[in-house]
Image 1 (cartoon, rainbow, N blue to C red):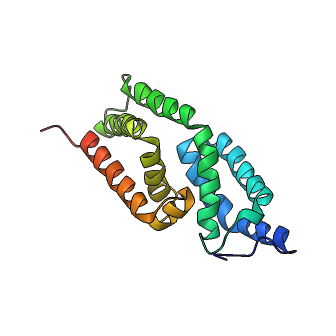
Image 2 (spheres, helix red, strand yellow):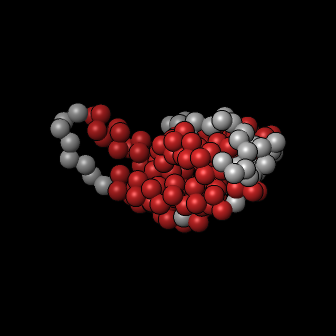
Length: 174
């Protein structure tokens, strides 16, 4: 059901099917960006907004999956400050000395988590949105463009910039 009619009399049933098809993946994406409890709330808010604005959905412009991720991302932006603070807090927490079982694997994982959190926090919000829609939500760049209501070329450019910034941040200095 890529481009359903949400304005018809069967809209409640269609939205229920959309929930069954997309809510789990949408929750997974939101939980990776925030936390599971906030993701629960945002998934509910996403479907409430979808219901309230179902007449605005234009099947010719975007798939319903992209439309739902766009709603979720807009709601997520309201939480953007908290997200960046959380990423920075994760990076600070990961920087603390760790007691581990004697293997280097734990220390390496903690370092990687700290570095990734810092790198994500330093991205421009619009680049972070495209990157995480692609990397964590599994959308194609064109779907991320639809979700964010931007041109596909702009989405690919932002994705390239985000990947380049992450690579530059995460690669060992030479």
